[in-house]
Amino acid sequence: MQDVLPEGGVIRKLWIGEADKYHDHVLRLDPESRHNRFAGSVSDEFVRKYVDLSISLDTVVHGFFIGGMLRAAAELRPLGMRFPRQAEAALSVEKPWQSHGVGSALLRRTLLTARNRGVELLHMACLAENRRMQQLARKFDAELSFDFGSVVGEVESSRPTPLSMMREFMADGHGFATAMLDLQSRMLRA
Ligand SMILES: CC(C)(COP(=O)(O)OP(=O)(O)OC[C@H]1O[C@@H](n2cnc3c(N)ncnc32)[C@H](O)[C@@H]1OP(=O)(O)O)[C@@H](O)C(=O)NCCC(=O)NCCS
Image 1 (tube, rainbow, N blue to C red):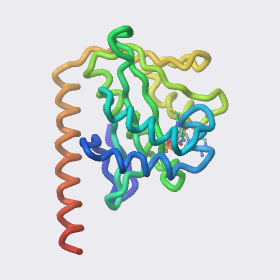
Image 2 (cartoon, protein in one colour):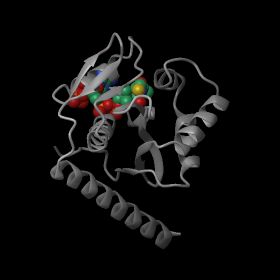
Image 3 (cartoon, rainbow, N blue to C red):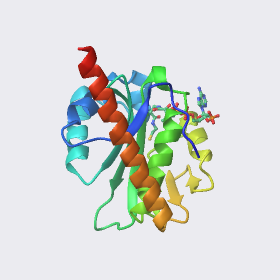
């Protein structure tokens, strides 16, 4: 399925050295979005430490960029050796870019990456009152069976296939090419 993103927006994996962009994005979230993202109220200090930890772990972060700014992100964090084939996913979209299909596109990419890494159980810490996230998850009910009581999503047909691997490689290649073109055009304008 083709992603419909706000004009000029691109989704790609975050590169090493982009922790600052990720900090800045999470710190820009409005209080309600930050509360929903972390399932509770957290300080700026907590956000900084959390992002540093995420970046240093085996986490895959997809970012939504527009005009060179990171405006939304989706994390896929494996739970480690004690819980093989399990991972945690979390999404954050800055308010002006919410309800424009960005969360859907990010969750689609995250599910593809999870599948290609053999993840069978995907945990999402979603507050019971977070209707928007629940609506979003329901759009993927062919791939995810959600139990919002225990906030665990099961990734259906989690086996990677040559086609699912190819889809991820192609998405990565497209994200890289678009980022390079964007950088080039901004350098020419400067
Ligand atoms: C939850 C969140 C990730 C959704 O991202 P988004 O970009 O707004 O989502 P989308 O635009 O792709 O919309 C997804 C679905 O949510 C529903 N939705 C969108 N806007 C909505 C609104 N204002 N009210 C209720 N439901 C809404 C719709 O069902 C929509 O699907 P549709 O457009 O096909 O009808 C985003 O709002 C967000 O970052 N919130 C704060 C942090 C958070 O809650 N994170 C989740 C915890 S892990």
